[in-house]
Image 1 (tube, rainbow, N blue to C red):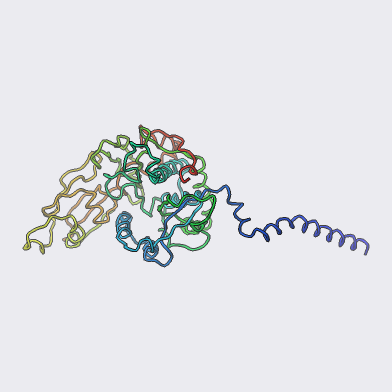
Image 2: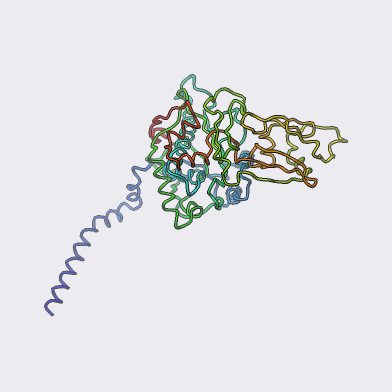
Amino acid sequence: MRQRATWQKFKTFGSFCLIMLLLPYIVTVFVHGKDFEALGNKDKVFINVRKPKAGSSLAQMESISDTVEANSEENRAGIWNGLSDQEKETQIVQVPWEEYFVGIMGREVPVNAEMEFLKAQAVLLRTKLYQELDAQEPAATQPADAPENTGQQPADAPENIGQQPADAPGNTTQQPADAQGNTGQQPADTPASGPSEKKVLDEEYLTREELEKKAGSSEVESYYNNLLQAMRDTENQVLLYQDDYAFLPFHQSSNGTTRSAQEVMGTDAYPYLAVRECPLDKDADDEMLITSFDYKDVQAKCRSFLVAVAEDQANKTYQFSDFEIISHDSAGYVQEMRIGETVCTGDQFRDAMSLASSAFSIKDTNGKLQVTTTGKGHGLGLSQWTAQQMAKSGKNYEEILQFFFEGTTLTDGGPVKEKIE
């Protein structure tokens, strides 16, 4: 009985000590409420992000993005820009910088990506985002001789360059519908530590919940941690060319050789985007795809750039003799082709027909146009498949970047907090 009484006193004393220990915390939460929660975020950097409002047509467009062809990003952008009530359709939220960065990376790289490949991809992304943030500086703070086009993509870049399809190599799960839950977001009017509303990014990203849908519940933790580590291990690092942000497109896999910017874009401004031999790409997933089209469907999809013809020819259905590949670039991608009386680029045809690549051949099969493509993506810049194989063989991210962007300089671009203030 005495031993039981002693134990009871000990429990009572322990409970009293616990209450006294927690009392300051309880009082602080009671007095300060949500302001106390903000203390945990005081060192976080938040970025303004424009995204569709829940239930808007833009949000619905995002929710069906898994049914959109891999290279139709520019089509969705066209719909976006054509909306007269865009401001009503979108909202600006504040997202922690790390969550935003990791979420974009999650859209761009496969779950099984090697760490050095992830680091290379992180540098490409940071360079792009820093460039976009710097481009939003008030005119008065920019150098007098600053180039006008300092945004995400060069003005003379072909469509869909630098865009990464949702079905990146190794990612067998398409991007999920706009998920709800803990997105790490704050309202755009979060005070004090938040960025100026003048600087807004609109790159799509995956929330933690969406990352779990992509990677699976058993893999999401390691996937997230790998993305975060790649970001932190390359902290503030960007690629420059002659003291300006480099233009750094990437694609899933080439046809075995990446392309020259001079040939694709007709400019010498990006000499570091040169032909690179990538023989390992020939072993990439879905490297070769064969698709057949009715000739009338080809005619309809390409109508926007076909030259006007006489009325008696307008209703004529094309046949194989109306198609001819005229030339290839040095990497083997179609440079020019003829459709009826129109000469177009291989990239125009690829975009119109939602082809995986503009490295293709054509032939007539059973009265249809059969197109065989090699590679996935535009073929400019970094090949993700080869970068992954280089990482597996022991190459570090600096070596990967120099292989694809020789002549650029890896440098410290400064903390993101300086970019958004």
